Length: 280
Length: 231
Image 1: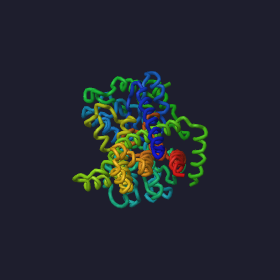
Image 2 (image 1 turned 135 degrees about the horizontal axis):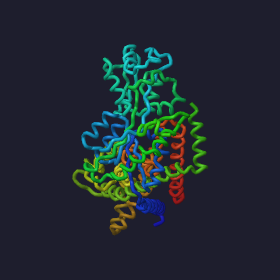
Image 3 (image 1 turned 90 degrees about the horizontal axis):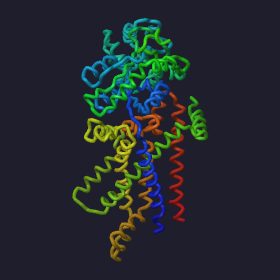
């Protein structure tokens, strides 16, 4: 029998661990709110300071699942999230019109920027119109990196291309199918132009040679909205807690946390549920 | 480009200061991978023995399918399980998505083929003569079973170590079914993926170093038991 010793020891070990997991997993009895949001929001670190006061006040646990805007919306449509915090106005409107979400509210905004190599072969530096800058980039045959992942940033980029005469395809148009950070690295390696959200760019800026060339166009405005999933459509969702969260994030307290949040020494988001003059 | 050195320093710092977030992530990874390995072993070891010892129609096909499943991409399996446990799926009512149980289901399905295939091979390699001798000497069913297990024990342990290594290192299933939720379903690998996305390469590498260190310790202990008794 001693030959079996190692096997027995191994199995006992595994059984012990397995039982710990099951005892542990039944101990949670808090109210749970599943928030599907975009990677740019989660990666900014804002939610780490915005969510804990809410959790404490409502004795709830907010589980943040961060994916692209497109996927966050699909998760909510399937009833796998209670609420979404995303940035793609047209897709948000479709989501609400189709009856998947209710009570959409504006939360905050930041902006997109167009980055490119310092040599700027397309000569777009300092331009004030994003759509003209895109046309110049395409005409100069410079490389352009697209995320191509149905994220909020990707949707914005495609809407800017749609406002030009250019069809974004060909050798110069590189679709990575990856997140913002990975795509920024690709643009950097290939000395290409790219549209990025400011927060992710700031996080990566120390490792990048490409720089900000175009900013400030109203077209580059990046508003974030919050939408609870419609309880009439998905009856199991935690709608009350979702509405409490909407109330909190658009309240004076929530908006103040957003306006005061800084990362890399810069303000990343500007609150939009309350007028700036009322924030004092 | 001195990520490696920064990573080594960070990893060391995170380990000695027992960083609460890192310990939480490490704990989740360990719990999940050991639980998944346990359930895969519970189902897989008997199945592997059965497939090896029993002759039946379609065995060739079954073995081929089993070997094919060894190359199953984690994302494909994750998508499949997602479609089943999503609120719109057949088991949607159970609310398994974005929980540890959801991850365990995915991971067990991921490594079950590995356990079955490797146990099958290990049993197959057991000396046929000894097994037949035992039968001719009138070994009972349970004695035959014990003989097989003890003769194939290195192969079986090897199967479990391989499976454990596959789950603790995989990211697709944990990410899709767990959702990388902070303090709940965030594992070492999903944290590595997230930190890489954030541009914190050295921190991601530090987590990678921690993961490998943990695997080293576990394998060291297991190898000690194996070699300790063969002396």
